[in-house]
Image (tube, rainbow, N blue to C red; front, side, top):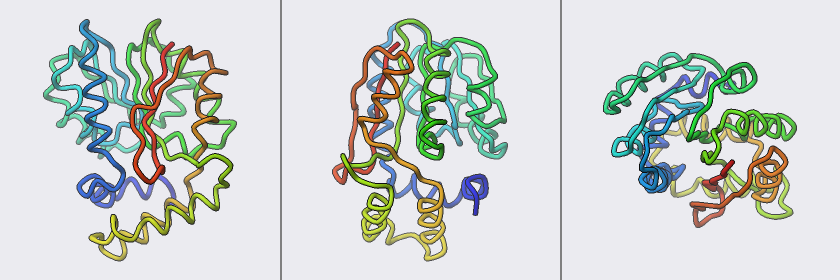
Length: 228
């Protein structure tokens, strides 16, 4: 199953959201707090948006000037259209890979969010994506990124073995086929980096500052914030 096939089976990803196995609730609350700090209307770019459930709820109380969603899944974008109807601003939905968007599109955004997608790329491609993210971000803009992370000195294989052991408990409510599909996706496509690497690549791309807004107790995931 490739990345497209996994996320096209939206019912599996919805299980992850409903059971909060990927900490969407904590991320949503952190994003809502981040957006509340912005008192002037801002242009928002939702990269690899999926159905925009989390970002739509986090943005609802905020002064959003425009909303742009980018995702390769047309069905997910259709759901995003309904979920973001609560936003009182112009909305655009672009059916393309977020990496293609970064390489080929212009435009300036005040806030950019990318969740659980950058880790599918090689380290070289992650670093290239950071350069384009910096280019698209307005002065004084904010880029928030939620990704799996390696412990310091940990290899990919060690991280994946640790993650697999962690499935017992959080994923017990999943049907066996769905649980196996999640694990198959992780071991095939996940290429996490350490926090040091994410921060180094951000600095190399030109970002001025970085901070961790959320890290789960198991140290599997982190929500990072970078400024231009």
